[in-house]
Image (tube, rainbow, N blue to C red; front, side, top):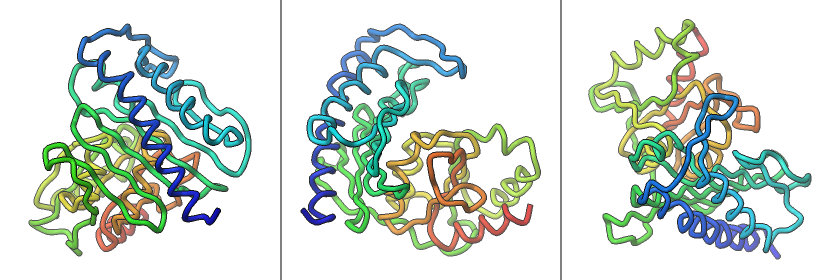
Length: 268
């Protein structure tokens, strides 16, 4: 089987795993049928998180029993060249509080390189996906659910038309990079904090131009990295480092704006 054929097969299975996770998550969300436990890192977890992760792994393992798995709730399992990265509910705080800005994130990594990503935001009404070298796509129920290609915007410099979105900025707020962010905001026309999957979907659509986050886990973004890159964007850590399992920050945007923002952060 060629690499292209294998990734196409893997995407089909990943989408099926996302469907299965949605069937677990949706009724609990709508009926508010879950208990919340606070983990050691002070983040919440529910039965829906754990059940969805187990469901995703069951679907994936049925086709790829020899692959390794790294899930938000159960950690790393197995070794090998192929590693599935799974966040069953990215945005559990939103899930718990009853607003639909949460998603299921499934990515596939080969020898450290991200190859495939599925970002399924069932309650919000859209799903995005991408395979390395194959473009990025989205289904939006508000647009009839017909898949369409994604493409980042073409704004090349900061100005009145530039839109920036931020996520968690706790550590950035404590050092000199805060002033860099303030300068980028002053030079831009719009600043929002959409967070989680949403601002990366908007970036890949061309609706916003730059995303900045300083505190996250690679499981939050692995699938979104592939989607943004295949939509023509650039996605790195805030210091420009490639995204890997140790990544804890994100700088994503159109090529020109990413380069300009990265230069500013490096100078700080």
